[in-house]
Amino acid sequence: MNLNHLAIFHAVALAGSVSGGAKRLHISQSAVSKQLGELETALDLALFERLPRGVRPTEAGRTLLDYSRRLFALEAEAERALGELKQVGRGRIAIGASRTIGAYMLPPVLAAFHRLHPEVELSLQVENTQLIEAKLLAGDIDIGFAEGTANGEHLDYTVFARDHLVLIAAPRHPLAARSPLPLSALAGQRLLMHEEGSGTRAVTELALQAKQLQIRPAMTLASSEAIKQTVATGTGLAFLSSAAIRSEVEAGTLVVLEVRGMRIQRPLYRVQPHKARPSPSLKAFLELLDAYAASNPGAPPRRTA
Image 1 (cartoon, one colour):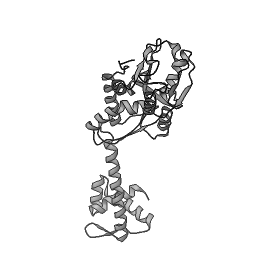
Image 2 (tube, helix red, strand yellow; image 1 turned 120 degrees about the vertical axis):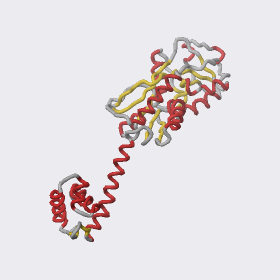
Image 3 (cartoon, helix red, strand yellow; image 1 turned 90 degrees about the vertical axis):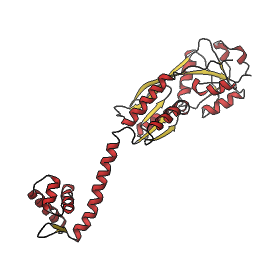
Image 4 (spheres, helix red, strand yellow; image 1 turned 45 degrees about the vertical axis):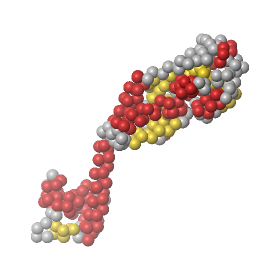
């Protein structure tokens, strides 16, 4: 069925006359009559009864009018929905973030954005960096935030903040009393790490390799919380983001060990597919995040062993 013919039929049915339909559509009455005739011929059905003044839908016309009402109402709804996406304060933002960013950096920004734009639906998925990149390429999320190294061929990486990785231990760990430590003190130590694919693990391994330290993980754990809890028992050491261990350092359940000659600073990226055009709502979110990152620069906690 020709949708242009259907639009003409709809206008005539609502107006109750061919001339009224032509006026609604801003086209000539003869063009309306011609295309109505073409539609009736194509359907092999009479859609209107011609009256002395105007027209009246036949049974077939009333049936078609019911469908055309729903179709053009849906069209109007689609136009409204797309129009709303041009405005900040409407729509949905699907976010993917690696663990440190998702657990310790984004929550205050999400809360602030929700207060400003409560009608925008926010969703956050926390995964390791490799999974975040895969979800972006699959179109499952709108924006990604990742630690580690920028290596996605079809993705754009923009640094939005910087983070420090620090070496943590339980206060009673034998090395806690010796901080600051020489690099050689790390040899033979049990190190707890995230799984393969974690940005924190990738950066830690590169930093150790640069210092020619070959340390195999004694334990692989799936979350920063699990690593912190295990380290606090005195079982091994771990490199974690300074943002992830602030409360534990302040509470005295963990201490930061200073290692001479080792300072691990890493960029934190926002990640998008090439040539992605963020919606107004996403642009507003990113502006808020940039403002937050500028006012809360990452720095190691001061309390050390």
